[in-house]
Length: 317
Image 1 (spheres, rainbow, N blue to C red):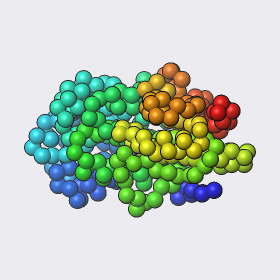
Image 2 (cartoon, rainbow, N blue to C red; image 1 turned 60 degrees about the vertical axis):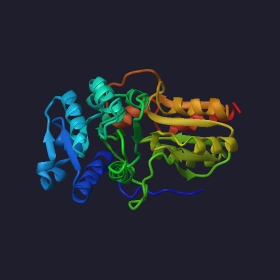
Image 3 (cartoon, rainbow, N blue to C red; image 1 turned 90 degrees about the vertical axis):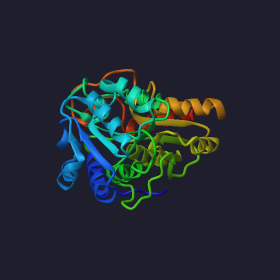
Image 4 (cartoon, one colour; image 1 turned 180 degrees about the vertical axis):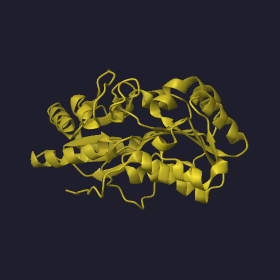
């Protein structure tokens, strides 16, 4: 069984900040916009090195999306930065009309996604954003798992022509993917081979899936783990080929089970490889205030929950 090592927990938002800084040094067309959350989005270094390429919009997120769309007309590659809640729900009309419908090359970079925003509570813990963004025609949706992958994805999306939603988080989480990785949009990563159940995970739940696979192995259940960092376009072939072997699947995400990764996987499998499936996701609910660890445990978004879901789905084969 392949093992992965946490090389030192880091927050994924710092991966975004460091990736943006590197882009500032290598791509003169990259510009950044922020809605009064520079520190939270880790954009300070980019601003220090490129003050003429930064726009502080203030608490006016809808205006920020419109300005970003306009900047693309002159050949700039705008990266917008604010919390995931304010990057999507608050400005959905502007994204739909000015960015997605108009096919503008805007990179919507969203921090503090999901329950792990923590103590700020339900009003800020958006659990619907993946669904909102994946429904927009032409929108690429990315949800990275650790610092290294977030940095690599940030750099990669600058070379992708078209609108992108890049989702990452607030807390420090395990950093286990290679620092020198080549990030490929739409290409799932096979982390663990298995024969009894497929675990398809995204974001912070990828590390939890790997931890769950260890426990399952001790119980005599061989779990295959797939890292879905790109939710749209989804690597359908990787999922189908794995499930043909294991005959069942568990999807794991820090998102509402309605509209998230799990539903995308269900659609693909129902059309190609009908398969028993269990969902590890929030169950049509809002969050609440608490530490990230407390919330992930209460809402069943951890390795223990993945183990239970795998044990359940294996019995359904």
